Length: 507
Image (tube, rainbow, N blue to C red; front, side):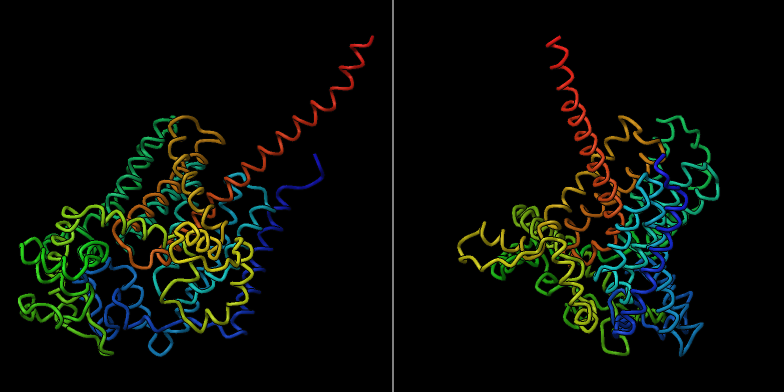
């Protein structure tokens, strides 16, 4: 024993994390960082707040462009707290930030990280400019990041304690993710359930029946959303925007002359001559729909003038985009592969450079951004000649930060290794192995969907899995440190033995 009480060290680390979070938020509040409320009522993903306030349940039922949970949160706040919505949103996001900090610290401890390392990693994330910027951005990115990390925490507890309560919370969070973000598809939910069943059987944990019982309700709830959209809108999905998102990475990247040629050949439609996510009057008149009497489906523009992309006409428009996008891929698959590579390159950009974040907040956070860029080994590199491809690649990597550009792919590879290791051994215990496999699978799945189907603002989207990536990094780094320390000890023992061996040879 070295005299250090692990429980006492854990408590000290906990208080350090809480104090660091509270002091940092107080500091940035004093410096003028504020919650950006501008997305409310203007962003594509949000329904008109006035409609939500006056026709809450029907509006959510007829919401087809997005899963309903985040709009339900927005509508509930503006309806229940009129005149105080900004304060409630700020308190909710601060509460989410504190939850993120405490959960990350405790999860790292449960996965075997010592208290000091867990505290350092946790503070490194929650004090980062990206975390502070997204915490002050009224968008679903921050709540999704918190819920995803919480799901891993309760999965680990469910596997370790085998209590039904933890299983219910885990699957409720999984369902909440699917009801908030389209990227967490019903297929992801099903794979998570089946993977947990398979891992439980693989390690003889006896959790099969309990897993089925606790997962049934949440899975059926998510499936009900998909079935509702199939019955009402003819789309078995939680969002009808797939076609428009895919078009941004395919047909919209074609030169105008090539698009005109494909249109003349009947391979694409005239809808692809319009950039996706444009106001309704930019599209051909055939997409106009008769009024339904339901405001969220009939409203063309929100009160501020922004388009209502939940208008019923956009379902047909998205279907046309999807047909054209698939035709474009068949016509020139190399173009799509190039778009995926470009999106993947953008995916590696720092989260704090995301479009949509408050410019005022980013300006206030700029000194902190400079500190973090230095920590991620961002280097000033002179502009290379325009024809020097590898020089340009090196310059971009150096400017963004070598630790980020090289470290993020390494962490994703480690996540994939954890998934494969699940079927070989349970090093560190089954609960640890399964939780890390869940994190690895989710990060890889999320990355694959982002870079192949949604090229818009890939680095902004990546923030949603950043806490999970941090967990994988922390475990990998600690594992590497322990392996290096063990190698050093073995080498030192061999060196210490050599004089004794020489002395014996002389006797």
